[in-house]
Image (cartoon, rainbow, N blue to C red; front, side):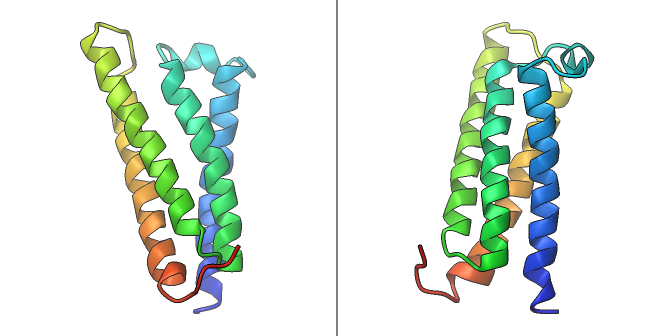
Length: 132
């Protein structure tokens, strides 16, 4: 079980990252008509999700290889998402249009990223010396 857990976590994180990558690039580049279906999206939130998706994919590799940089990488993703979330609230208070589901989606994404960051810290960082 101990050897399977990193692969399981990496698989979940990679799937989450690939889904996020697909959706964010589909909105940014207007692929497959996704932009019209999303309604009033906020571009900087979509761009933050795109950046996070790339970080998720690198972190999935870090889980498999037990790299100590996995937790800090996910921490960077959390910071990017929190900054985008703060920017979203500024956008909303300035009267900008948005979808209400964006708030819940951002809270969910931040929570998931925090959980994976904590798992990486306790599974990898606490047990290994720095590996580059």
